[in-house]
Length: 107
Length: 113
Image (cartoon, rainbow over all chains, first blue to last red; front, side, top):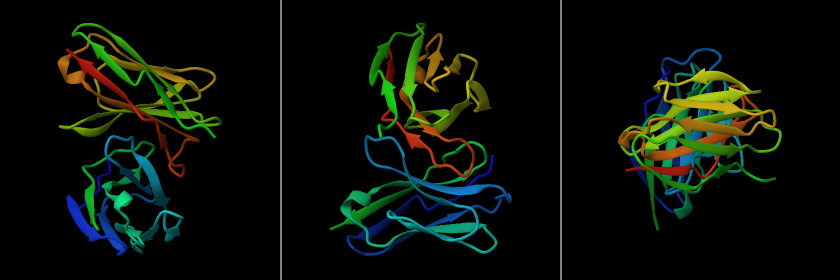
């Protein structure tokens, strides 16, 4: 199964931008890069996904490296409600979750 | 529109028993995937059903099985329960395929005693 590597944890202050990195050197040409987050006591929540080009939506932006071996999830202004575990996943016909990055946001 | 619903939300069973969990997907979604989440192993993929056929399967023993009905609702069954089966069981629905996001339900918390 295709694997991703993320830092275990990151910290941010409220209203600051947050860049969450992800390495996926074994990505194949048809794998989509998906990001989900899981807030405490809730199921995972879809954040964003992309294939080759950078993507923006109301929640975040996804920057994908030209060789597609890494990507970065960008939260433009972190809020306390963004504190969660963020998972970067290669969708290879199924979602294989890693350990994710636990994001702490401080007021 | 309504989100993914799972029933029951909480369940307590005894070792050796069997259990059936239910998942109702978002209207129009034909793919339903099941996941197990434990503190030790994290989120693990169980299987995916699409149009009543199992399309993908994770690395779980045969005690874990599922099915999908013509209305896309899905059930997951675990037979001969073990203590290690205690977990949060999540289902997610989507239109299917790598380009489509999955929407997760709140999960069923199963405790095996």
